[in-house]
Amino acid sequence: MANTRRTSLEHKSASCPRLRITGESMREYLPGESQVSPPRPEIKDIVIQLFTHRSVIEPILVPAVVEPLLVLVLAGAARVEERVLGGEWEAAEVSAGDFFLTNTDEPYEMRWQTHGGDTFEVMHLYLGLPLIEQASRELLGEHAGPVRLCDVSGARDGHIAFVMEQLRTELVGERSPSCLFARSLAQALAVHLVRSYLADTQPARRVNALQAYKLRKVTDAMSAHLGAEFNLAKLAGLAELSEYHFSRMFKRATGLSPSQYFIRLRMIRARQLLLETPRSIIDVGLEIGYSSPSHFSQVFRREVGVTPSEFRRA
Image (cartoon, rainbow, N blue to C red; front, side, top):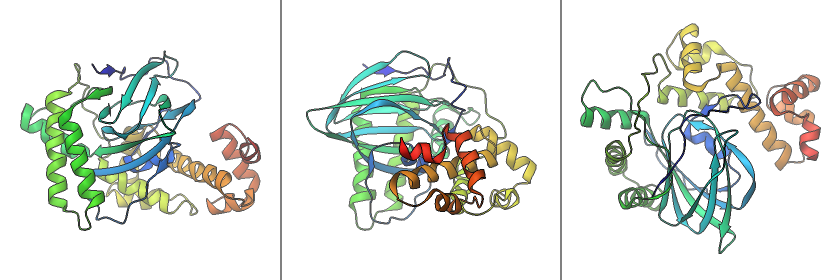
């Protein structure tokens, strides 16, 4: 029986502002080892990530994602606990073949304890909103609004497991993966999700939110130029919108203004450099665009809660 998570945070911490990210960015927030695959052609609306996880005792904050997230346990077993911010922990015992479905608009906390070994392996699959919307229109009618999928933890569904394994084999195992075959699998999975995992209540349409493919294009550009000055006009141009409409639609999609999101990406990179390299704090600040060490320290403390030197010592 699926252990269903609440899809809204009744107790949202003031210290953790709302954040929604694209699927590709999730590896920046998870402590597990991301398995690097050979370069593959980009397939629109399909993102796959493979992780190897060890036990995580201290809770981690998992951001909400723009696209529905499916997680399939590939190997190993673990006790996975989740909670909305300020809520009670809810546990699920999972092993190979179990899946999670997340479609929440809010961040939540997780921790897990592996069983019978040091690690367990999972596959993340993000289906682009156009795939879900296409399935919704076909099954529910052309005038159907955007659908809300359930949040499910530690359930079993042979169809989901089979299709996700097929996608992994095609996109990771094949030397020359077929975009047509992969997209067909993803479309079949989207239809199954709309048929089987619709939430009881559907939200009102989110008007004027930036489309997922445009959001991905903009956030990729931000990540590639963290050392450059923030340029709203350039980002709006990538989205083919005026600066005013781009800013409003970006915030509706992520909960943050473009400049706030850019700073958040800079701080993610700074934390990585401080933890994984011996580079000086001045060099780290310079790489992400802060020529003044005091300004870098001020922004880092505001966003992270401690100074760069304190973060590195901790």
